[in-house]
Length: 148
Image 1 (cartoon, rainbow, N blue to C red):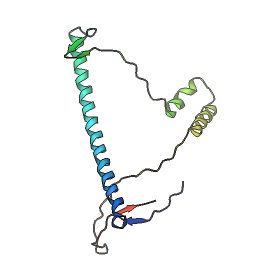
Image 2: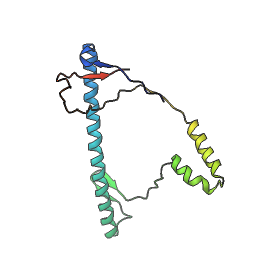
Image 3: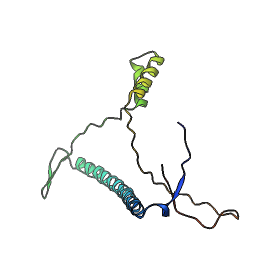
Image 4: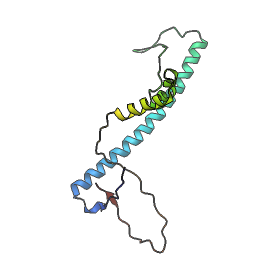
């Protein structure tokens, strides 16, 4: 894949409406990122407590019982969880039924090439790493946004 260097356009050169929309988009993106981090922490806490509750219920020999709290009913269930069906998995498992390693490689390659690919245009937000200033570095900096 060829990479082309994109020109950089100063944020101040964008129409004011575009500036406002980009600021709103950035704010939403930051909020989504923060909520995802918060959700991850909540899920980790929930899983830890769940494990503790199941251990306690097992110790009390009430794993097969229902527990009622207000309008909620709780019970411990067994749930099947499958590993992801990935190409790595296929490459590891196919040799068990196909003895020819070249055939396995060919099948995996074929499956990879047959996947549907959908291209979307999206905005990618990244943080610009600040560079240490040297004598040759200009003190004036502008906010710039790469545009396609």
